[in-house]
Image (cartoon, rainbow, N blue to C red; front, side, top):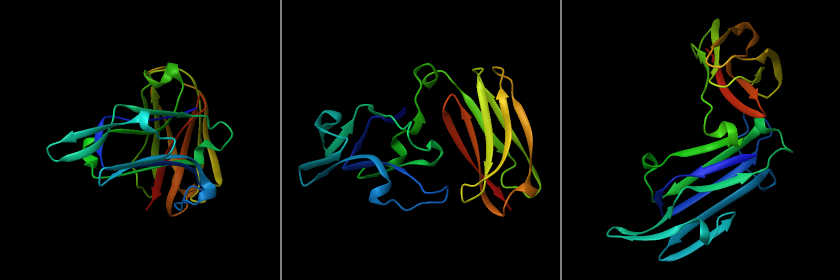
Length: 203
């Protein structure tokens, strides 16, 4: 499952799109790649909305500076079990609201027991690098994990590690940059059907 949350803020326009990339470097959204989308717009006092956002998802607020759309923790949950979740992308945009004032959990794999309580550190240090970096993984919850390395086209280079972690115990692996192509590569962490993607840059 995927859970999308938009916290309280004010907008004239807001929209989101959940889509499936062809590969890790794919940045072009086309109609056939869109899995789910929604949006709302307020122009000249007229409100329009589309996709999975409807009138019950927002409030219209009148202030001294104008009329705005407000979300009170808008939440959308989607089942994406039938697609490659490593290639799922979320794009959000807004117009008329200050992007510094709102917080978005852009996209997370939703498991009720993990959503609220799990804290994960998944990082590469240093990054960018030329020769060797350390991959660091730590969680406050013990569970199985798998870490894979991909090139910029999404092709698998190597399975870095797989096993089970102890809670609050950091795991560290060296990353040999001779395996990487120059530029952007990707590390994928999978645990409990959740995916975390890191860009790794070989300079």
